[in-house]
Image 1 (cartoon, rainbow, N blue to C red):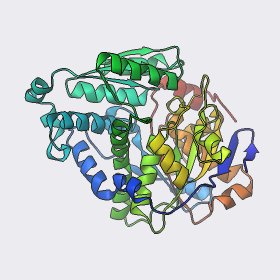
Image 2: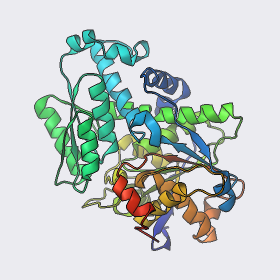
Image 3: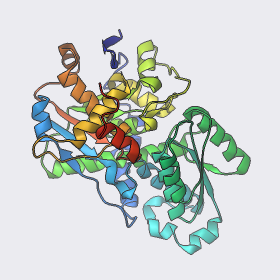
Image 4: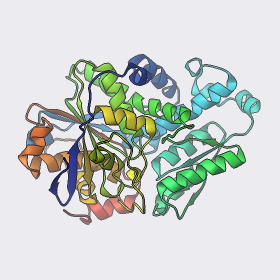
Length: 407
């Protein structure tokens, strides 16, 4: 049954939830595999582990035991996590072309003139709302290759220019995200380019899997930090979903490595692009696409068709799905940017802040039954991932300074 808590939020329990272990799917994200992936990512000279921040005063304010924020706004100097997928997928593609195992290669070796001479010129193409395309463009440029990036209608000039500065031929289309993906797929076939997309469909699943595995290394960093600090794992993880690749990668890693007592995974999406919420609400276990112009401020999440592998994972392991309007993303940005007491200030973009905005809403404004259904209480340890910083600085100031999208 769909439950509506207010005009700002709709939510539903996922009645297909099952904690049974799907070995074939989850073994793709086990600790050994993901550690090998992270080892390759660490060979880039600009790699640095991003911080895991405990907001203890905010946790007390919201009456939970702990709030942990993995802050990806400082990743590789690109202000977003997406490069973790792009750098691994492109590296994996090149190593496969060389007939070598990526475990035996470093990023520097892939940059060598000998490799470029052997492979020739490769053009990588992708559709993006901003962060993914910039990660692909950056990784391609770092390896001496070309990239072509198309952005959907409504993308900002600032995000376009950032991608162009990383060496890509980039344009904003007059299409929505999913139609732009389709256009890129056709161009890749016509021009013998390599499609690097984190969504997947029948016949296009290998590279999207590599991207998801690249994302999962963030979860490895989190668990490694928790073990070093001798902290208990999270009881709840709130994950933003566009096509779902990021959310499913984090979910799969935690499910694979905490089989006996996995966290509760909560999916959150923009109201205008809530394909997971709509799919869960239908209750058949099938994908329900969302179409039309998706002009949410959460640009990185404005996707109407889930990645098929991500959907399989989340439709089994996600506990609940929330569909939220833009005011909750803005709320999350303001809360993170204006901390309580000694809590660390975190600069978060719209897509990065929505999990914290949702948590704040649930604990401060939602009816008590929402927390009760989610088993969210004073003993809960909640993890959120700030997936982006202020990738559009004017929009950030409009929201955090000038109070745009007030609830």
